[in-house]
Length: 321
Image (cartoon, rainbow, N blue to C red; front, side, top):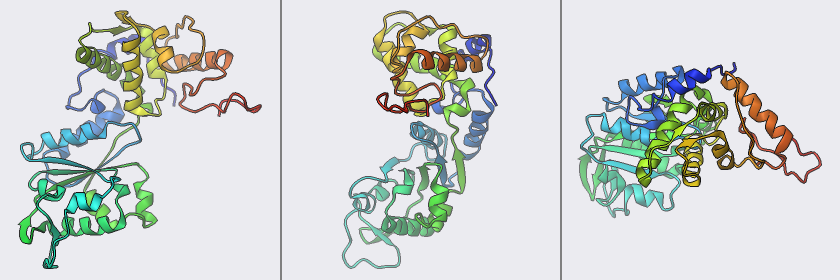
C-alpha cells in the first residue's frame, strides 16, 4: 500500500523527535514501531533472554542497551561480544582449564562469560557462532552455572542476541542449534526496516541532525517540508546507518541553516544536475517525482529512490533493476 503522508503532516511529525524510550531506533509514532515500543516496555524489566532481529544497518545495540538499562540489571555489567570475531571461543570462555570437572562448563576468570556474571551478555549476530561455541553456550544457558577457574558459580546472566531475520531458516536447516535458539528467544523483538515506517523518517532525520550539530558544535539546522518529504519517500536499504551517514554528509557539506532538497541530492549520491524539486502533497507523489527525475537525468546513479541498484552504465542493457 503506498505511503500517503501529506506534507503538512510531514512537518508536524518531524517535531516528534524524542523517542519515548532511549533508543533513536525506537523513535516515532507509526503503528509498526508502536508495537515494538510496547514490547520493549513489557520485556525490559524481565530477566528472560531476548532475540532482536533486524536488517543490516539498524541500530540494534541501542535497543539492547535500552533493554539493559530498563532492567533490574542496570547497575550490573553489560558485556557485548561480536559472534564473528576471531578467537571467539577463547574470548567467551577463556583459556582451557586443565583437569576441570566435567559436570559444568569450564571458563576462566578473564573470560567474557565471567565478566558478564549478574548482568547482560549481548551476542551480536548470533547466527555467526561456530558450532562448537553454540554447543558450549547452550550448556551454559541450560545449567545457569559454570566453573570459573575450577570453582562452581551461578551465572545469573541475561542473554540478549541479535540476528538477521533469516535466522529461522538457519535453525530449520540445522545451521544453528534449535535448543540454543529456544533459550535465546524466550522473547523476540523484530525491528521494522525504515521502509516499513516511512512516516517516522522525518522525526528521526530531525533528531539525527540535531544530535550531529550538537556534537560538532554547530547551530541547529532545520529542514524544508520538501526535504523531509524526499527523505520519507526513499526506502533506505541501509536503514539507520545509511540515513545517519547521508545526514552527516549534508551537515558537513553546507553552512545553510535550512536543509533543502538540493542539499540532500549530492549526499544521496544521485549523479545528476541539481534542479528545483517541489513534491506534491504526499510521500507517494514525492517518490514518483524522484524516480521520474532519475529516469530523465541520472544514468549513472549508484542507487535509486526505491533502494534498488542500477546496472553498470556501460552495459547496453543498463536499466533500473
